[in-house]
Length: 100
Figure 1: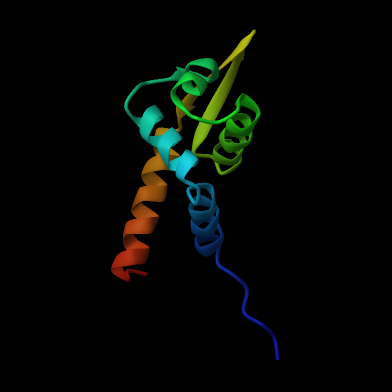
Figure 2: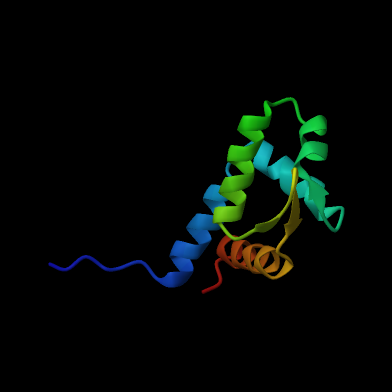
């Protein structure tokens, strides 16, 4: 018996869900969604976590394609990737509404 493969949509939705599965990452997306971009140092001042931990959370969001980072020594500027954010929102909406 051959096991069914996951669809590209299922894989992408799971990746977005994983990236959003931590309260810090939810908070980061809320911060970034209210402004065009933000420097990692400024974000660190607003969160009760170590900078190294912040870096790990930002990397998770970046790996999922939800944010992008631009290196401007000595800082990194982060912005939401609006197209991916909208795609994630739509995919989750469809998932919870039972569409597709």
